[in-house]
Image (cartoon, rainbow, N blue to C red; front, side):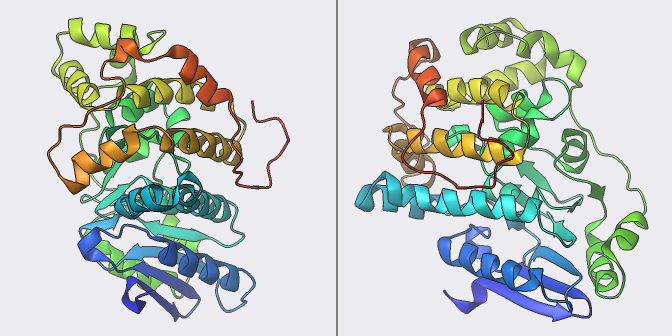
Length: 352
């Protein structure tokens, strides 16, 4: 691994893991995952480390997610199993962080999306700022909210999480707090002083002492979106958006019309299924099975090509229309169990 991609430091009682891949918006590759994982395992039983901090060397991004270009290259040259490996590593790290015995703090300052949410969104103290932009944008590349994102979205108030999942909606600090993706909102100018305090004081004391920040606009409330997002299926939901006069509804419709139709269907079904799952580990297992299925379809490679490689923003989805998606395939996708497994310490053997 290039040594500058991850900076690991120890000051006082604080162990700090800093992402430092700014040109790629801290996109996480396998070397970075392995370095972070090894550090977390080493610090777990180190009496000199009382608190762990996850942050970024760049004010622009905490992490924009996994290295999708590299995953597509793995898929083309080595197949689904190799392409699925980074997802498996990411999800296992999310589980590790969620159950970590010491307080973990994440500074999700700037962009935090996809796998970045998996890294920073399941820890004990999740801090956002006026620069934060959080999202689960997977439907744009023919995947579905993952890295534990489906668990967070399924626990958001009302149907707001379903809306965020289908539209890849971007959350500012206030919206992230409201949706359950963050715990504390501070000014970015305060991060250095908070970091210094964590080196000398217990994390709980530092977090409880943070002053409130002025709220930002969080968008339409849950009651306003409910008549639309309570639809029984995707064609009905998009029909309701089409006939709705509000600006937010038309913006939501436009976002979904750009997304992969099959991914929208799977995301709709997976969100409803995740609401019935008992914990994060079960949601991660469901996500992994869905992603393995979706990697094997042609849409993922095509979505990455259109969005990140050729950048023509003209993906040719299969199928191209929401009404042509096979509900049977969607149901099979949810029920299927691939040959791959996360091997997480699930609370029970029943994940349905």
